Image (cartoon, rainbow, N blue to C red; front, side):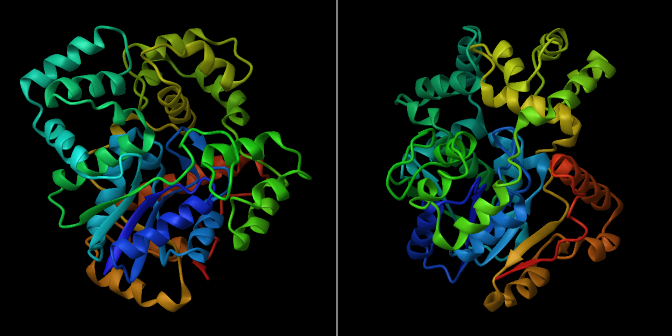
Length: 400
C-alpha cells in the first residue's frame, strides 16, 4: 500500500513529520511518496532552502521517495498546483491513497463543494458573477457563491490548506482517479501563525524567525520545532544566503523596462488589466514595495506574488495546461532500503521517469526535453545569488 503526500516543506518542520507519521498510520501505508515543490513555491517566492535539502529532510523523517513538482505547477494558483500534483501521483501507477492536511479534518465538505465546481450549475455561475461585481478577490467570491449554492457556511475555504484540499478532491474527480483521499486535521499551529510555540509551529513562523533573528539566536529558537536530524543542515544552508523575492527586484525592473505591455499581459496570473498597473509602477526599489502598492480587495498578495514571480521566470498562461500533466516524473530522492520503489515506478508509470538529469534527458520526447531544460533554467535563476550554477545536471539522487 503506497500513499502520496503533496507538500512544499518550506522548510520541513515537526508538523510535517507528524503528518507523515499520521498518514502512515491512518492509511496503513508501506510507503510514503511525496510530491514536493522544486526551488520555487506556491506562495510566489523562492524556497527558503533548495529542493535537494528539503527532499533529504523528508526522507530522514518518514518519507520513502520524493518526486519533484515542476515549477510551472508549483508556482501556480491552487487549481494549477493541485492538478499538477494529483496528475503526477495518478500517472505514477503506484499510488493507492493520498493524504493531505486540512483545518476541516473531514472530507465530506470538500466533496460537496468539488461537485459544484465540476458541474458549475447556472445558479452558481450567476452567484460568482454577482460576488465579483463587488470588487472582491476570486477566491472569496467563489467561497461566497459556494455558500449560497450549498446552503451552508463555506467560510472554511478561507484557509490555504482547505482551499488546496478542495482542489485535490476536484482534481481526483476530474481525472477519474482510483486514488482514495484521506485528510489529517492540522495540529496546533495555524497556517498563518508567525509565532514559534511548542514543538509544532507553522512554516510561516519558522520562515519569519529565519528572516528576522540573528544567527546566534536561531539554533535555540528552531530546535523546538525542527527535527534534530535536520536542524544542522538547515542552519548551515541559511548561514550564507537566504533567498527572497526582493533579491530579484532589479531583474524585474529590467524586464518591465524592456518588455512591452502585451508581453506582460501574456504572463500567467496577469488578469483584468493588472499588466497596466504593473507597468505604471516603475518607481519601486523592492518588490515588496511594489506588491504593497498593487494590493487591492481584488488582488491578494499571494496572487500578486505569483504574478510577479511568473514575470521574472517568464512563465506564460500558455505554459499552464490544466488538461495535460507534467511530461515526466523526476525523482529527487529515495531511502536506500526502499530502492525497489524505483523499479516499481519505472514499470508502472505512464510517464518517463528521471533519476539522473544529465543521463535521462536524452531519452525524452522533444516536448519533455524542452520542459526539463526550462526547469534547469529556473534552477539557474534560483541559484543566481548563491554564486553557483544550477545543480540540476550535477546533483545526484538524494539517498539516505
